[in-house]
Length: 264
Image 1: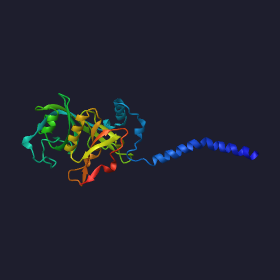
Image 2 (image 1 turned 180 degrees about the vertical axis):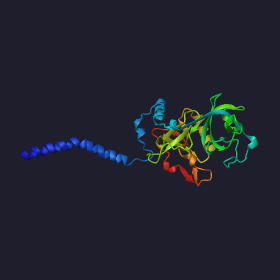
Image 3 (image 1 turned 135 degrees about the vertical axis):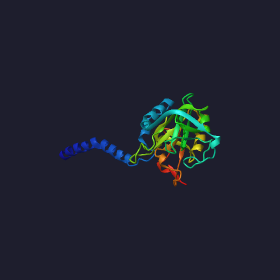
Image 4 (image 1 turned 90 degrees about the horizontal axis):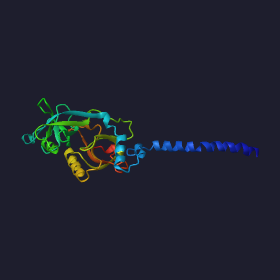
């Protein structure tokens, strides 16, 4: 009886600490099995309404730290320059979604908003210009039509500062820049982005985006690119992919970091 009285308190002490031991084991196991697509932020949100999605995006979006903004006069060019060689070596297509800027790097994506009517378009820089001092950007004819331009217009340019990658190698998953005509630009983790379509052709992905948003105007749909997309050049062996994706806090088909590029 004396031995039992000494043993029971010892077991009682062990039982008191048992829940803490189990929690420690579970925590270690979780931390060791994190993969792209298992970003813990997802579990913090209960998403039932549009307001819930907006709040979730607001909490996860780190894009405001890297925003690029410029305002000024915009012009456009078209038929006269069709098929001429642009400054980055491509052939100018007046029916594409491209633009000329004096300083911004080739490949940079911009949201261009007509300040007169608040209509926006997304373009990719592939040329130098304009050469009139009071103008900041030249759009392809098709891009100008999208924002109902007549002659020159006052515009707002939005994008992400070139040369910056918000998330380093220590991140659990990749982050992506998201561009939208109707919504604010975002920078979000891959685990909340569900892929609808992907392409190495920016014009193709823009047409897919326009078609999708015309049928589903309230959808949280963006064109996504990896945050270091400007490091890709036109003569690189690795081909940049553009993604049409929608925000889904419970996304199943994530944009995986390992699938960001493909060999030509």
